[in-house]
Every structure is written in structure tokens, then in C-alpha cells.
Amino acid sequence: MTRKIHIVGNWKMNKKMDDIKTFFEEFSKLKDDFNCNSWIAPQHIHIPIVREFADSFGIAVGAQNCSHKTSGAFTGDISAESLKDLGTQFTLVGHSERRAFFGETHAILNEKTHKALEYDLSVIFCIGETLEQREASKTEDVVKEQLKEGLKNFPNEKLSKLIVAYEPVWAIGTGKTATPEQAEDVHKVIRDYLTDELKMKGDEIVLLYGGSVKPGNIKELLSMPNIDGALVGGASLQASDFAALCKAS
Ligand code: PEP
Image 1 (tube, helix red, strand yellow):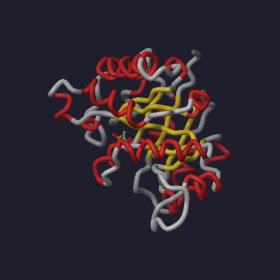
Image 2: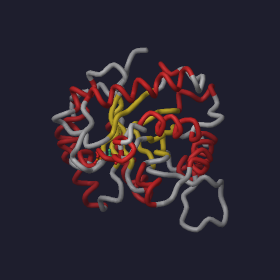
Image 3: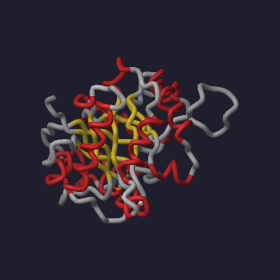
Image 4: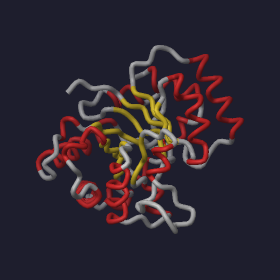
């Protein structure tokens, strides 16, 4: 497969309107001819305003989460249908912060995946082990179970809508990045598992690495054969860092 690198910014619960304007003002001065797919996931409430800026740069705008329900009496939840209606192109599913702080189970994440697909959103399905699990040599078992349960009954004809992000929990927001070799080892396990066990066309699925990615370490991560891009939290908040990540790709 020819690799088109994806750089996805996860802004988490950050930025107000003024910050968004400033981000894009700065970004417009730094923007070059990037060769990668640049995507940003702001807070839901900011999707329309971010789209107003991002569309002109060819940046796709996505959500950090979506409901596993279709519509109705689910106060505070955000439906895939409404996201699609706002021109949202993708959603994260199963970020470790959702799993840890909001108790999202394999079953719910599987429902979210299917709901997002139903409304034609691309899914960035996030998986990864905790430090405790890594130290107990359980990394492979953990990521395989997350894939098996979360991607249950994923329709083969929608594979172009699937991206998998490997994000070791111990590397998220901690400044500790997995070494390129550590990340590559798990990416290879993931690709083989998708192909051999889940019977998907593993070679066609974009695999992102996430966990303290920054301009200083992106190049070596992307030099690995099974790393097709990055899901970036902290370093995506600054226009200069986000532009540098896109340029490095
Ligand atoms: C993330 O939130 O997905 C992430 C990888 O965060 P950070 O880049 O800050 O580690």
C-alpha cells in the first residue's frame, strides 16, 4: 500500500473561541504544502467554528467521541447523526481517557463504532495498554482483546473508514514516548492480528501511534514500516508544533 501519512490532533477539553482563531491565524503563516492528511478533533461545541477555518487548509474536522445511541432521551450525549450533519468527518472511539474516566466498555465501544459507520463517519479506534499491563508482559493480549471486542462485526466493505490508533496509556500526556522500535513491534502485532485473526485487509488499514508525539520525535516514529501517522494531544495545541508535525510527514 502507498502510505499517506495522517497527522491527527486531539485537542481534548481545551481552547476557547479566541484560542481557535489565534491557532489558525498562526497556522496560516506557517502552512506549507503539506503532503499528509491533517485532521483535528476539537470539543464538539467547536466543530462548526473549527470547520470554518480548517476547510480552507484542507484539514478534516472530527469528534473526540460520539454516542452509541441513535437519538432521543440521552441527555448530554452527542449523536453520530448530528455530527455528520455538522460536516464532521471522523470520530475517535475508545480513547483511553474515555475508557478510564467514563467507564466505556468493549461492548459500548463496539456499538459506537457501528453507530459512527452508520452515519458515514470514519472511526479512529484507540487501543493501548497501561504501564502495569506492559510490565506484566500483557501488551499483546490487551490490544488483541480491545480489537476483537471493539471491532466485532466490522463490515469489510467499510474498511476504508477504519483507522486504528495504538496509544500506550503510559505514554499519553506523560512526556514518555514509546521508542520507535517498541511502537513498531506493537503495530506489527496489530496489523497481523487484523489480517490473520479478524480477517480484515490489514495492509490497507492506517495505523497511528499516539503518546507524547512531538516535532522532535515524529520522524523516527514515521520511519517505521507499520506506523502510518500519529494521534497527537499536547503538541497539536500549538499551531507551530502542529505545522511542524505536518511538515515532517
Ligand atoms: C492523546 O490524547 O491521544 C495523546 C496521544 O496525547 P499526548 O500527545 O499529549 O500524549
